Image (cartoon, rainbow, N blue to C red; front, side):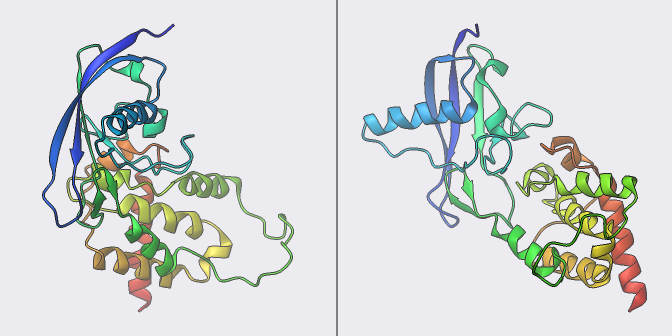
Length: 251
């Protein structure tokens, strides 16, 4: 059975994108080790509400490692000190009794703070709207075997499609680049025949929208792939570069 731990929680408080933020400290006592990180924040908020204080705002939804909304920067790591996991999959047993745990929102000019540790990741939606789709006739679903796809390509496309758009790559990057996210979304379509029709337009449009929204440039540091909760490969960035260059050469 996991033992209880007590620790100091330093958490970012900010009333909005134009407001100055600061850290608040809370002493958390006897938190069970099998408590998830988000459940620990729930305990904190229950205590604050009981004291008549304003609870800490943070993002969450499925709490099953699927949606990626639990976007917290914990002790210098997006999603916390675990490989291939989101914040909701982090348990307090990973921390030691007496630790100081620092929690911050994603740091990026393209992800303005809404309040406290919740940021606006609408920029990713705009990038997807710029080209992250294929134009097909709707109606009855076609047979899955209508278009033969090599297994290697299908596997690579599925690996790229595992990106949950959480923004961890942007938070991990020293430049605030969204290249891993954009390259994953381009790759999942570029690898399949259904996506080749609009491939050139897609690569140009999504890169242009990424630049327009204020994301930084990629310098191949690799922090994005190292911190990604779904282990999306940095090789997708190379594929995006190839798609983009081919599109420009066609022009």
